[in-house]
Amino acid sequence: MTPKSVTGRMRILAPLAALAVVTACATATPYQPLRGSSGGYAQQQIEANRYRVSFTGNRFTSRERVENYLLYRAAELTVQNGFDGFTIVRRDTERDLDIRTSPGIPRFGPYGFWRPYWRYYSRFGGHSWDPWFGDPFFDREVDVDLIERYEAQAEIVMFRGTRPNDPMSFNARQVLANLGPTLELPR
Image (cartoon, rainbow, N blue to C red):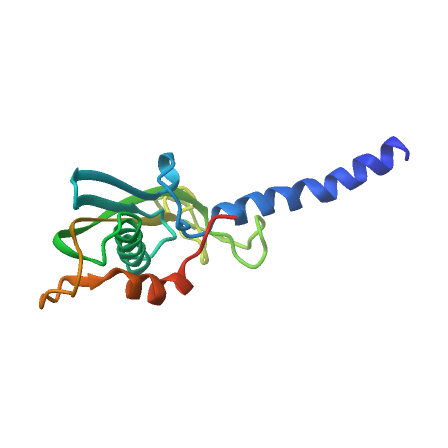
């Protein structure tokens, strides 16, 4: 291979590789242990049958998915510890909203940077007017990016035997069976 053909291939492959990296990063948080800022589940044992469980999602993870992954992790812990079900005694979902703004670029018309304009003179001096763009320094768009992240937390108490007559009590094996097919695991 000649150096020119290698350079030509690099020009084609470099943007494709960058696009692949950006696309891979633009996905919802998979069901995984908490790793830095990428999100995931965490738990802390409080008593023999009591845990604090949480799941943190990234900006691409919906509130519903965060809450489902929290329930799945609670059910998984329950079965791993030899219990049949769990009752949620405290539950909270927090929404973190980050608003980022950045200055846009001046608006350009169908002619790109070149555009027709009219100049007229009055008795008070010269003045130009741009019919499409207005003032090129102040007539700019602003880019606004809303970033939502959700974190669900719950304190659970595990039990053995039949489920209590409480709407916040769950059969762990049924939760695993029903929510298991919806999990997105890390690649």
